[in-house]
Length: 264
Image (cartoon, rainbow, N blue to C red; front, side, top):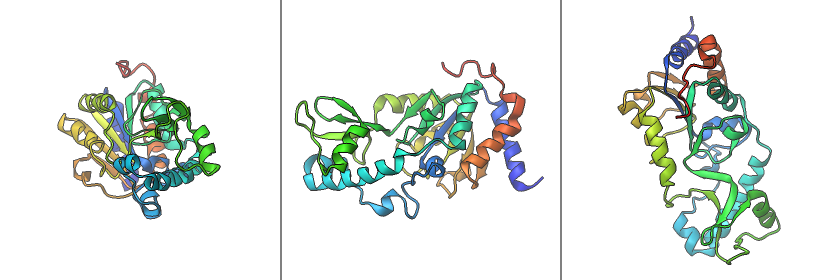
């Protein structure tokens, strides 16, 4: 048995034995869908300057810079479809095994892939909202304004600032989502961590919370993270290859009816 097969077998045994399986995902799970991650060479932060939330609020120049980045990112995301890693996690949920999927991603591909119990810690890129009155728009409507040259869109109801429904640097995390994620992590017995550098807090603390509560960790990430030493099994291979292999090897142990309390 080669090293990869051995690690897959070990991970599959953990998944089969879990009664409170939780997944945590970052940008690396969506790279096979054609969406750049944020921190790798050529990623979003390699191509664009970070515009903080405070800058967005106070500077039109910063907003134009921010919306230029978003316009290009929207183009990249527009035709993205779920890949086999997204679908494998949805399969785990449909089989009654995955209690919850916690994601740092804003692309909506988990939902497109069939996952239902999704906590979006950093919001969603699928809509925009007014920061004052709360009016919302499908992101396609805002993208049309950006493509037409309006790189500082304002609310047509109250005239205030419009922003994607995502969390920017310096902006408070959604408290409800963070609390729910912490509860699921602390209540898990196995946590799958897929495609995150585990460098952005407080979201990156989720796997550590699970470990402190006694959960076994399975890490699937192309590069090292600061917390690899906490994991029972570590994979550097692609997320789709690894997750399909784990689900395939787990086989009949993932049949519906086990993990019957996964939505509680």
